[in-house]
Length: 101
Image (tube, rainbow, N blue to C red; front, side):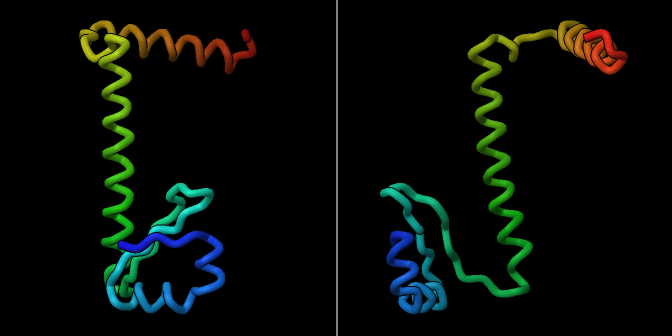
């Protein structure tokens, strides 16, 4: 995997395209931090690669939600407590939608 700055990508894009065609991934950096990932793909592989990226993003977000739930103690809520929270949120929403802000 190679790293290039946004400036290098603009100035030396032919080199980047060669690396991509050779099967390498390229990380584009902005202000010294990773900003984007470039990877070669074929039309037949596009949906599969996008699905893998989306799954990885979902998995990361789910792990973050689980961590927050554990930190706040919500991971130990009973089914009855969860149902009560849902019912309360629905009441608040109905009241808000009815104009009773």
